[in-house]
Image (spheres, rainbow, N blue to C red):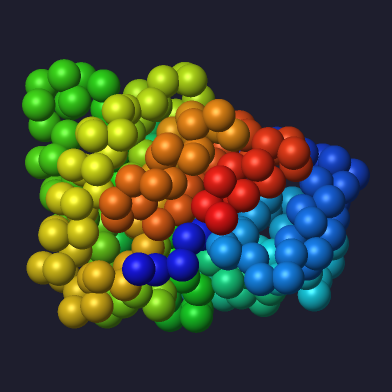
Length: 249
Ligand code: PEP
């Protein structure tokens, strides 16, 4: 069974002072664990990746970006290339988050290209997939995940360079979560679909994301094929994020 990964997506939150304080707090807690049962990853906004990296340096907490461009460099004003994230000490980058798909028109092919760029830069791509509420109501949740895996997971993906985050769009930031039976069904389906595109699919970490809190983390993390969490809102409060991580122990 893969070791659990607890990842925080800070989104467009935190100025430098807040972000550094949060990162330091998590770093002290994580480095104080004798044998942490989980890996911890923080993905701050691009403006403070460097400062957060310095704050967690030596603690064992991992650093990630929230998005990257498919190209390594060039005339792409405002974008960030995967090698730039690697240059700042990132080991991971989130790609295909539903907010990128929704507000920036990112389609599966673009997500796949970004994940490939991440791999080429030596980063682990955290590829997000998940159905909208309308798709779930129409009974299409599994089909959407199949389609997104086929389209967003590039050739050359392995358990070392790829993490999948199942994030039902309707559960993100809403306080609503699927039942544990639904999570189990989708995660088992994702595992089976991954076996079509990767030889080491059993070792790929499949995170659940969408309104994970300290109060529901224990039951969600105990579901088969749930190998950790991608956490938005609750990752901005050290006590809450830490309590979620400890639910893996
Ligand atoms: C997310 O945006 O990745 C997320 C899971 O958000 P939240 O935990 O706030 O639902």
